[in-house]
Image 1: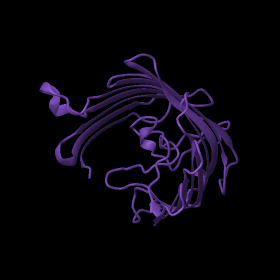
Image 2: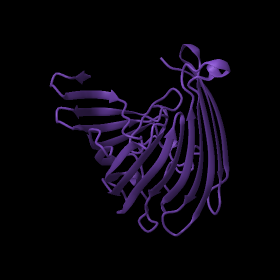
Image 3: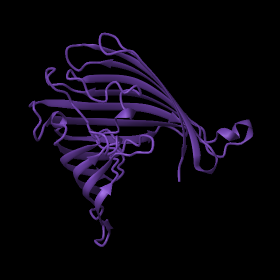
Image 4: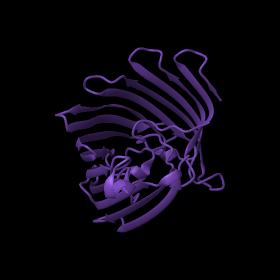
Length: 295
């Protein structure tokens, strides 16, 4: 149920998708034919000059595993508060507070408070510099069994030229002396910290992820012998993982992804992940092929 009867205010109640920012905290996951959805209500306010406000209440999380799974639902008391500025000369400023009391996952209940700056600057007619600077602090919340606080940091810097983009990223999911770590249980976790999904739940000693990414997207409508590959996306990443405390080596990972739009709404994709453990965990290789249809 949705209402826009109040100028500058959009109200929604019922079951909905929510993809906030880069999906680090809240996302729809979008795995195969099943999305992560939320039962609750939200309000989006655009009436104030220069800022967009969002508040959402979530009483139940419908996970990607379906209702027939014992972990298919998370009964919850979640409050999402989010404020985003208009585009400024330095980029967009965003502040957020996420209060997540997860009745079926008490150890992952948390309160996160943070913000980030994201922007891009043209260096010349062909080259663009893009960046993201983010910090957050997380504490235990609700019936979480361990009292803790942990920091989150994300620093991105990259250059783009035409369809090419190269980015270097440092991400810290901090730890409170190895007892508990920064968690994002409602995120689209697969797109973070490697496609092998080793770190969907942050280890108690936290996680540092240093990685580089190279990406190329071919323009749609390309002519000549490569015209059949218009819209092709190629992406490669290399990760080095370490703990946030105790100086533990968590190994490294190489990832590759290719996406090609086909005719009449169809697309094909391929994904490869190669995680090489060091002192902990187990070596993992994953190969995924997909054929999909968008409408």
